[in-house]
Image (tube, rainbow, N blue to C red; front, side):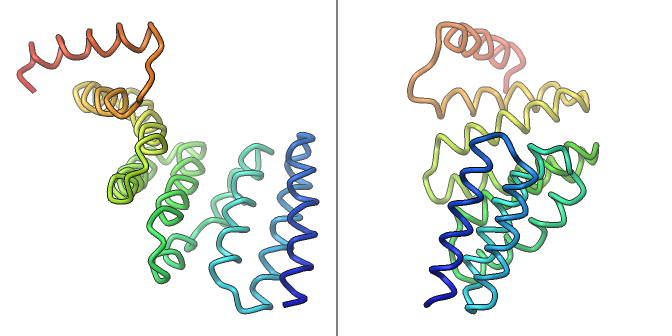
Length: 180
């Protein structure tokens, strides 16, 4: 129990560093918190902190280290049946892969993440993941897939901006024209 109290103090330091824009310092605190959770035998807490570490490392420009931090955490969340955090972990890994230029692998993980988010009913996060997938599909010249993914992402949003409303109408016309 005292290990988890220590981890909470470390997490607070990480959050403060992150909010101050000190991403590499935040990542180090999250890594330390992960070790504290591991020592306490809390694999789920460890995986959560490693995912936080991944996000901080991505923001700090340390993409290789970010991917290393998050790899395998999705499997831990799968073992404990936490599909939402599994999906978020896959999304973090996909972001790192995308930053590394490994677009095919990133797209696959974004698709897996979106599927899990659909299962758990997290429409807002699913829309975010789908928008990331659209960017990859456009970069890899998979334009029809990008249209479909963007339509899905817009369908999931409860409040659209005027630009998004127009885009949704244009996509609908384009997809009907293509008979998709």
